[in-house]
Length: 304
Ligand code: RIB
Image (cartoon, rainbow, N blue to C red; front, top):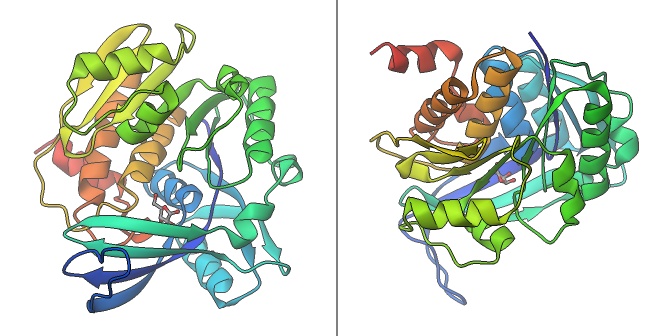
């Protein structure tokens, strides 16, 4: 059984609950404010750890109250924090989130996450069966350095290019599994995609990324499930009908669950099905990192 190593962002999510999202220049009165641990890296690490994988997180927090709270929370979820550095020169990453009708808008201020660099990933041990995971909420040289180290060690890599931004496509050469949503896929493929686009359009966009045939591309489709391209074959993962209260972190849950499953040596089809169920549980709860399910909760759905 391999370990999961996630290099990524660690944020405090400041979540305002409102009836609807304000328009530009408009103020709406909110109902509730919550502080939830989040950040794409932390969310993915928590998901993997809660689903049973030995998981280490590489990242940075500030030496402020948010940083201390985030450390305490992540440690309690069994995430190995040996490679999380306290960074006095920056505040902890903070995301300001408006949540209305289960959908969110997010402004993320990187703070300490913006100082994660190749040196941060240099010490973390990586071995053949390990899974290295990263996203785009930390500087890209750190992502590149992690994946290069993973390559050398023979470990598998998962990239979740979120939030999407321009990057050197050479990075994709060191990626084994690319997981992204349809908006990110559209931007990477240079085509406009909407959430009602049919599979053939999505598959065309996935193929246009020209990943090597032995790589996996998976697009997460929210309540429509997921669609993957595995050795050129389309794999359809059906959506689950659940009542979503907060979709924040659902994509991260999918990525973390997938990593945990692959670290356990499970086949890609089973791993994707499992990740899809995990994400469907996550959206039924408030908050990002605190809403990640346990392995028992996912298994209960599978055996139902
Ligand atoms: O993917 C969800 C995450 O994006 C939130 O937890 C927030 O911190 C932002 O990074």
